[in-house]
Each structure stands twice: as structure tokens, then as C-alpha cells.
Amino acid sequence: AQSVTQLDSHVSVSEGTPVLLRCNYSSSYSPSLFWYVQHPNKGLQLLLKYTSAATLVKGINGFEAEFKKSETSFHLTKPSAHMSDAAEYFCVVSDLGFGNEKLTFGTGTRLTIIP
Amino acid sequence: DAGVIQSPRHEVTEMGQEVTLRCKPISGHDYLFWYRQTMMRGLELLIYFNNNVPIDDSGMPEDRFSAKMPNASFSTLKIQPSEPRDSAVYFCASSFAVQGPTNTIYFGEGSWLTVV
Image 1 (spheres, each protein chain N blue to C red):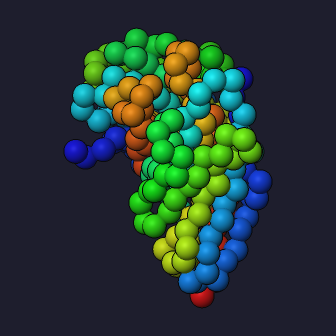
Image 2 (tube, each protein chain N blue to C red):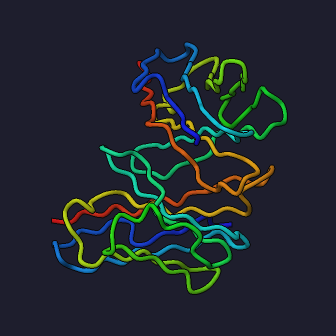
């Protein structure tokens, strides 16, 4: 069985400071991991994904995430927050290779940017 | 590509009425998913299709919910009769594949359902 835990339900940072959104996963096989962002009243947009290639994954809008198997983590970071980054962020896991087409979503982290 | 297109974007209906939500996946995608998002339960997979065939509907809450995919470019999610607890955002999503480097799932902007 697969699961994902987002360690913070709400993160607040000042504009221009670094962002860290934490995610830990559990997977029986080789997982694919994703981060999606949801702006208010909008759908989910893919930020980045890991699929067993490079462990440091670069996404859109300056975000990146590092897959650490030993720590079962896939934390999302950005060096400098922008006001437009304020949104809900979801860490997502999907097992590869065993016909498991289901995505398992974390509960989300709401990111607030302080001017 | 226009992305995944859902309609209606917003619907308010009375309890007991039938609700039909519609989805047009991205052209060429073989997988279509219906998700529901609520404050209490987060994002839940309701059902998904592969090549128009329902593969797993274990997430469908009860018999009042049904989903169809009559062709590769159209799917419906129907609730009959609707109840206030069905109020949620319903997302449709599609994917070219579910394994390998092309296994990215693209979401529509959602249908916001309120049952009063």
C-alpha cells in the first residue's frame, strides 16, 4: 500500500525568503512522486515529478524537489518566495510497475506569502 | 491543446435532483479519472477508465453515483438523487499512460457542486 504524509498543513514565509514544504511517502515498490499546486478556485497544476531518473527534480516557477530514498522524503523547495506562490500544494505518490494506476494524495499544505 | 475541459464549472441544485457532470479529456489520452475534493476527506479517486472501459470504481461512494465513457473524448459523472453531502468539487483528469515518463495526470478546473 502507498501513502503520503505532508508534515505541515500551513506554512507562512515572507516574500523573498526560501520555501520548504515537507513530504514523506510510503510505497511498496518503486514510486513515482509528484507535487501539484492548486490556486484558489482552480484545478491542480503539475509542478514537477520524479520517476526514478535524477533524484533532484526541477519544476516550473523555480520549484524543485529532491527524492531521498533513505529518508522516504520528497520535500519541495524554492529559493525565493513570490506572492504568486500563495496556494495549496499537494504531494502525490503512485506506485510503478504493478498496475496501480491510482494516485494517492497528501492532505495538502497551504502556503501563505507575507508581503 | 485546450487541456481537460469540464462542465458545468458551478452548479447549485436542490436535494433529490439529478446532477450530470461532463468531461472532455485531452485528445489522445487513454486514461480518464474522476476525483472528488472535500474539506473533510481531501482528494479521493472515484473511478477511472482505460480506453473507455471502467477499471476501478471502488471509490464510488454508493449506487447514487454512476460514470460512463461512451467514447474517447467524453465522460459523464451522474448523481441521482443528489444529497447535500455530495457538495464538493469534482475533478476530471486524464493521462496518456500511468507508467513511465509519460505518466503525468492532467486535471481540469473542476465542477463546483452545491446541493441544498
